[in-house]
Length: 327
Image (tube, rainbow, N blue to C red; front, side):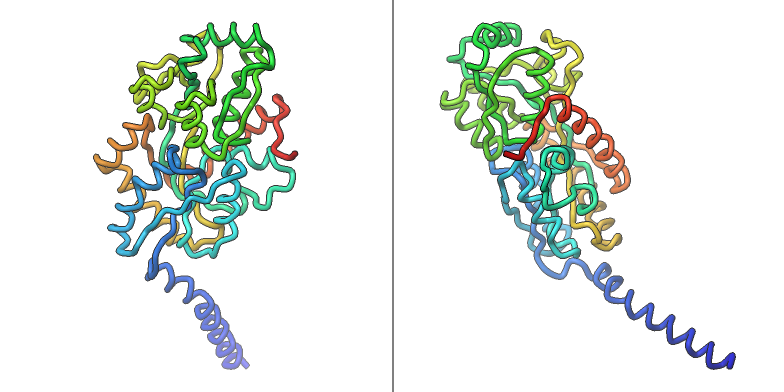
């Protein structure tokens, strides 16, 4: 009897190892095919810039083709849903941000994915301050002048953002609440299109990301303030909204990498290690800092903790502002 039980036990152990072997083997041999990096927003913004700065180096380090695909719309949630429902094999990587991670669960009643449950954090990559920007034809050169103009014409002035629920939109709504102004939100499918309209003068006011810096240097737009509570080193010459009369204002954006939840831990660890190494490269840091981004790194566990805090922060703001993406 004991021999039979021993044999059955050995058989059960062998069966368990057989089930685990494919997962272990896939992690050891990964990657065996091209890796797709999904940018949740259009070209011209910082999410796309981060994806394209990292992709060539990731390709070199992994020994497989790595290409960037832009899946835009719905405040970045189209891309979030796509990656959340992708195979759990590490071959589809999301570059996400506040809009499709931290705020989406509070904004959409019927969101087709749960950003916390269905996506596995890989690494926090950048922190960045958004910017309050105007076209020169608006005729304002300071936040105080903008507030005065908005209060003199309630409901007449419109501001653009990269989409409903993006960090740009949330920063704009927080500005409305704290400055007590009535301005109308115009959502775009990413910051790139919003910047294009702002530069051309079709849009007079926007909350945008630091990709706008090159246009400011050319004199096409006027940057009034950054949204961070303290001046970030990469854009230290730009005053904060808190310094410009909106006391206590603080809103910082971020970008990071994700895969579908359930992706084997060794694959997540490999991706994290490669991305950490890439974000420490001088040329990558210089490229990102040139866009006003502050490169950083984290472990998957640290990133998960960061996201938990960010979800709470923005869910509170969304509730107070009465923001919803459901029409």
